[in-house]
Amino acid sequence: MPTVRLDGMLRQFVSARSVQVDADDVSGLIDRIEETYPRLRYRLRDEAGMLRRFVRIFVNGEDVSLVPGLTTRLRAGDKVDILHSIQGG
Amino acid sequence: MAPSPSSRVRLYLGTEKGTYVATTDLRRRKWNVTGPFQPGSAVFHIAPDPRTPGDVYALANSGFWGPGIFRSRDYGAKWSEVATPGFPPPGKRKAPKEFGKFPPEAIRALWHLEPGREDEPKTLFLGADPHRLYRSDDCGASWEENQGIAQHPTRPRWAPGGGGPCLHTILLDPERPSRMYVGLSAAGTFRTDDSGETWKPVNRGVVVNFLPETRPEVGQCVHHVALDPSDSTVAYRQDHNGIYLSEDSMEHWTRVGRPLSTDFGFVVATSPSLPGGAVFAPLSPPEVTRTMPGQRFQLYWFNRKKRNFRPMVRSSPFIGEFGNHREGLAIDRLDPAGIYYGSTGGQVIYTPDAGRSWSAIPFQFPKIHSVSVSVPGG
View: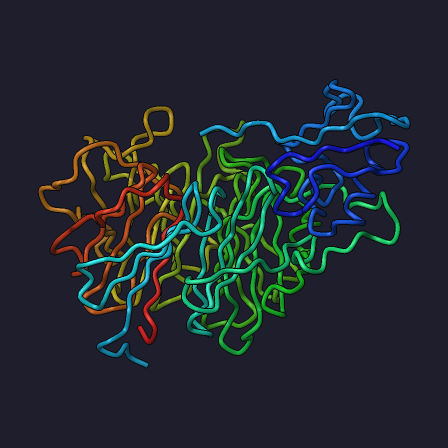
């Protein structure tokens, strides 16, 4: 089962620093997290299902936010980080 | 209802970093500033609801969390999020029964909220990017997209303006309940006479210099429009390509800004407290700095009857670069009228006496997107 680490910005929606989620791909992983934490819904993805602009997702340290993106396959033991890139100005 | 002597004047400032509320008394000399609310979000518009004093709506566009609509029931002291088109308010965001079902395109930004008419106390209209108009009949608990705009036959010819494909202007005709207008960049102005079922492009006479055809039916980059408070068939338009006047419900437009050194700009405002014309804030041309000419703060009063402009600030003491966004000018309904200008540099410059004297609120705000004013009873 993949382990997901959540950055500090998400703490206002999710009390845990990390959660374990059973999912086959990143899209399913976000579905499951939203199911557990409904307040997170529409914060990582917009209502059209696309990752919001400043959300970055790493699987085992590799940025998969753009490619392969939400279809990235997951395996048991994977470490997933959900982070936010810096928004300047 | 006239304002009581103890009435408070409130300026709602939508900024790049959130909402601020500046409060004063009827003399409009000393200000108290609170905020930011919705900190970190770019607030493009704030709408006090004149039907329910104390109700205020703010359109917050967060780079991290997406757009959101916030409502205050106490003149801006406390705020809570209501529903945004496409998703419900935070407390009701349950996961869908079936995953993977999404609409084709998300809302990128919220641009303008317009409270409905007096006899529709729960109705709100909302303009959004990409080129969308919504209506709520339950104070923002749910929203329905206007299909007349969504399916408009000219939509393939609409393009994004510099701020994106936004629907930024919503005007309700106070004398004709089924008539309203919208402004979209860069599509132009549209009028409905059947409560939003169908929309007619009303841009005749407005020139464009960025398309092969200079007088197209649609494609104009309208920046802002205001109706005349004493005759709603009269409209004043600040367009990318100049200042225009219409006296026939936007059927025809005449460019009246030629006498100015530049008639490019973003804002226009009218008020019953300043009858007979409109206030504009012309800026240097778009290919230059888009700030006030001569590095001095200046507003212009357009006299409709005389068809001329007069500067409203004598020997302007405010020196520097003054730019603005399309919602950055507001006029109250008091006598004498207060005029409030918010700059992209974060200054609020205002007059409490219809232009006889000008001051600045002694507070450095972030970049200002919008200025709205409310006076209970005023």
